[in-house]
Image (tube, rainbow, N blue to C red; front, side, top):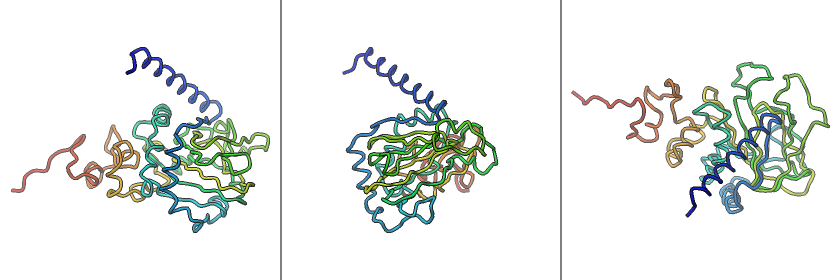
Length: 283
């Protein structure tokens, strides 16, 4: 059993690490956390995705990657996926950078095959099409988890440090690009306004990455999560996951209701949450 002193020491260490991650995100726009999940979880998620990674559905253009497989709606296909989407370290970062009631905007797997070319540089946070020019506050945070080692030649994500401070019309120079190399089980977390891309796979190996992306509660999600993860599947996840999918109400206020009621009534007809009022008995 841990003593109060050891618990305090562990908490202090976690807070110090969190501050370091946040500092790197503020300055460089990204931070890498190595081997955050164990090999057993990596393999469990891989096994749940295997039926969907059969080289049958390659990307449709150079953004999706004509030599890459993309699997969408991951929480409808892999229950273990929740363990990275709501990982406590990731949530601690999100809690500091996004407003309360933030949403899961996208969750997809990207399996990069040999011969893949680099993506165009882009940002993940389009601010819901509101036309807000950069530099500006990020309204989204993205993560990319390595399920194979990300190496310099197998399609590792490439980022442009500091580009989250740039105006929209500034293009990166070759010397400004950094390859995010990291072992399997690691994650890169970055600001939604950071320029990045999937790299070219010049190796003979396949590189699997999984990218949960999060956004402020008032924005439309990239994936329509309440359709991608419908009630019959969403009801088996934690309250946190349900809230991030969109089965929630933005507080203060009532944005997100369904037929005038809390959306969790769709998952659980007996739900009696905030602002719930029982129906009057029939006359």
